[in-house]
Figure 1 (tube, rainbow, N blue to C red):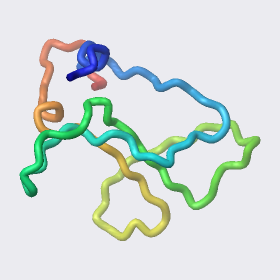
Figure 2 (figure 1 turned 180 degrees about the horizontal axis):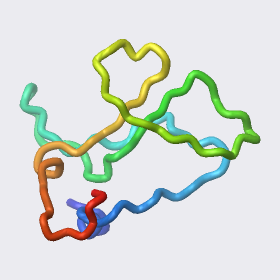
Figure 3 (figure 1 turned 120 degrees about the vertical axis):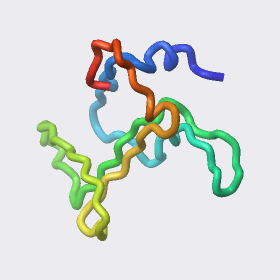
Figure 4 (figure 1 turned 90 degrees about the horizontal axis):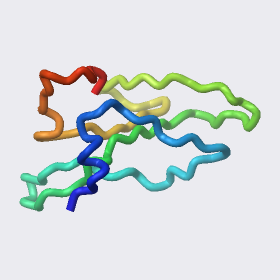
Length: 107
């Protein structure tokens, strides 16, 4: 069953996540994006609320560092030697949909 809030927000402009103070417990990965496992014949799985970004750094920030940092996603074919970024993106019909009449172009 789909969450009504997600359905109404599906094609709208992005909404900023709530901010937090202190350390954020990111020990669990977020939800998988919807997909069908055709290799092993498993049924549809995943949730639409699946856009997450995991950033790994060589060292943590100091507690008094309040500055923000930009994150660039670059998909490369090489070794993942010095830190790494993983992210989810939408697959299948949620990836390929095009909204021609939308004024929200930053989707």
